[in-house]
Amino acid sequence: MRGLRWSRLAFGAAVAGGCALLGLGFWWATQGQLPPAPSQTPGPVQLQAEGARVVVRHRGQKQVELRAERARVSPDFRRAQLEGVRRAQVLRDGRPYLWVRAERVVFDRVTQNFEATGDVEVTSSGGDWLRASYMVYRNDRAVLAFPRGVEFQLGGHRARARTLRLFVLDQTVEMEGDVDVVLDLRSLPTPGRNP
Image (cartoon, rainbow, N blue to C red; front, top):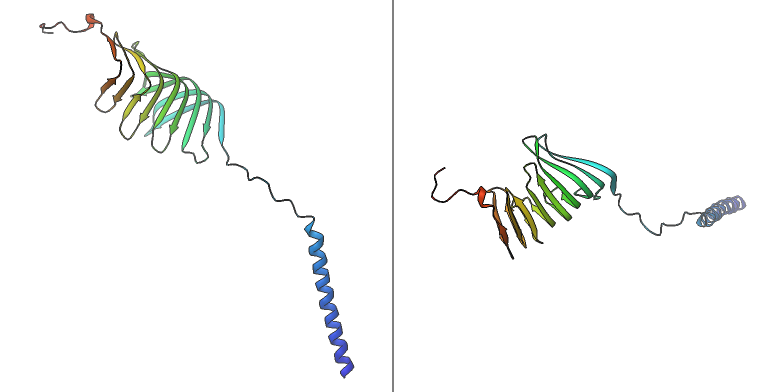
């Protein structure tokens, strides 16, 4: 009985040892076959379009339609950068009233702020125009600003200023720094005359 007991123990030990050796051999064999760890994690996906057409709507009504050579959207979809904006049409009551051109426009979807750079030009159907190198709109304050200089013509009157701010809600303008205004007196009412 005693010999049988030892032979069972020896057999169990042999099986356990064999399994351990098999497991160790399998582990050792697979160590050389594991795929190498990536040396660099890929960056976030960025959306980009060539020859883009962008339409901005508010409550279903089209407000802006523009065409750009390139459009990029940030990975978090918050910002859109448009390059080579040859023509942007701004609509009021469904009809175009301003056209804008710029080398680059960056729009923040969350704040509704935007900035335009590089030979910014705004024209109207009435022949009015505005030219600047940089324009920024802050939606929370409803202020359109030209902090790097601006030149414009409005109703036959021309002006230049180092800084111009248009307060959109009350339609007032502030100009600062080397302001130069040329008025067309023919379009102004004559003092002392009742219309």
